Amino acid sequence: MPYELENRLVIGVASSAVFDLLDSDAVFRSQGEEEYRKFQEKNLNNPLPKGIAYPFIKRLLSLNDLCEDPSDPLVEVVLLSRNDPDTGLRVMKTIEHYGLGMTRAIFMQGRSPYEYIPALNIALFLSGNKADVEAAIKAGHPAGQVLDSQFDDDEDDKTLRIAFDFDGVLAGDEAETVMQSSGLVEFHAHEVKNAMEPHNPGPLKEFMVRMAKIQSVEEEHKKLNPDYENRIRVSIVTARSAPSHERALNTLKSWGVMVNDAFFLGGIEKGKVLAVLKPHIFFDDQSGHLKSASAVAPSVHIPFGITNRKPVELPLEFGQTPSTP
Image (cartoon, rainbow, N blue to C red; front, side):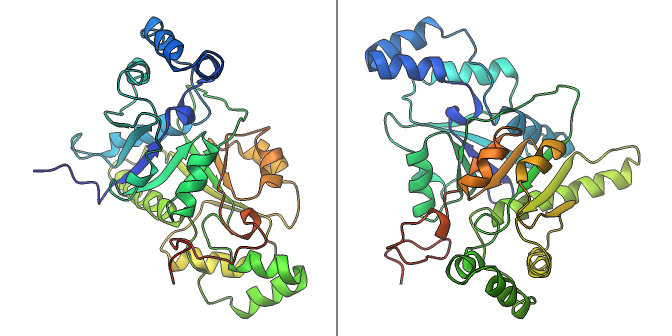
């Protein structure tokens, strides 16, 4: 029987997202591929330092202890690497060193593996490579660039805190387009008029839905184990404010998901809230918001929507490509 991925939360990660490759990249850029190979072989048994997305990935994989059958996990994390198998060996040994439950990998020498996202049913691809992420988003795949950020891996903290911006991340950029073209007053009017009409999905809608399914598993587990404390906490941190909040909440409800926290900040700097919330990962489509966010939390740029598009390009719904009618 083949190993099925359809009913799991599948995450694709580049080594640049999970581990600190600063030294390795410096060798590659300054001395070339041959010296890079020698460097990796020399340091084969020296684990790479933890990277920005490491705390998120570790806690996500820990949720597999909710499964009765270890061979049928809730979460699968697949390594998608530009390395060839030989130079990627150090990454695999690092994964083993940290005890991460990652056993599946794709190595493609010098090429981006993002084209394999649909084949592996991946709901989120994380990479430090800006070009790879932008290409994935352009192809209609759910991807985010892990930014240089402050992060804390408190071993005693078992909670997994995930924070999302709304427009251009969970939802499409329809409302943001109105905001950019017509201003705040028209934006609110548009959202009030369409309050009961769910937004089109954005890049990370499916990731959110699959996380909600794992939250349901947690709730069932808690019924049998009353002392169990829920580990997943999902938050919305958005620049929306009343009255545009209602359509956002109705959209989440239509998807069958519910967040634990919602911050409708109406222009308040997101970094101030994130410093208190302390998410293990935060997703936003706007670089301006991510500047303050990355100073206090692991931050991921979703290069989707009108705020990331050249003015000459026409808006596309998520999942479309430029050739899609």
